[in-house]
Image (tube, rainbow, N blue to C red; front, side, top):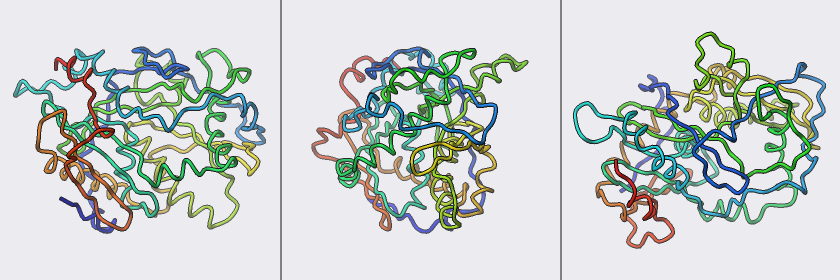
Length: 365
């Protein structure tokens, strides 16, 4: 089976029915990426009093930083651990009024949804997604392609330094408690994460998905409604090169703002703070991007409606293709820019197995 992608204009028009996601849980990954069913890794955003004339050196401590091993295949195991630990929450959040089955169509990470939504505007990178249907729920898992593995393995030292800057920027901007200051004395640990688990809906597709969040705005802790767990209290942190030319601005609007908007919109995060840096990795100023305003800032270089309509269309395609309800059966979806999306049932999944035995045997839902 295959799905023709077509041009973005084909999906433009009316914005699809998209229910704002609700947070149903959270979890933490510690310095060894061990799962914890709590919020111990939750951070609090610390915005400097002045947003200009800054000097955040993102190179400090580079050689002491603890790196995340991107070559290690974690698949969606971490999210599956959360589901097993919180089966009552899942059952209560997705209880179907008309049947015994849970009203869940897909389980995945936000990064996968972002990748799908951006497909119609992607002209360089391919992607590979595997799917398994079990108890009427389709589990989606992104895998490295040969091209992405090659890019990672051929990264230069300069590439590695630049990829570390985002983690260091977060250290300048977050603290462990609402009343404390950022601690720059400890090495950056790229393995640590705080993630929320959300319930969302796109047209007829109900989705349980997880997303890493950078931190909570302490200001929201003092809101009169007392709802400190609302997604609207989270802030996304980004870095980007200081923009000095029209060409750089076009690329920033066309590519970066698209990904930034998708990442935050899909989970309902209302605000992004970007640290604009020079070529030496020194952040000179900060800028705040309200998520809702980003499509206007991007000057109509891409369509939010087209992204979400395509994602819904792809999910329709997955439902048609993934027909066998069997945890050992894996379907492989592959997309190469400029081509179409292909689907095949793998005869011997091996490394592409989506659901591990420990999950299958312990799932009571």
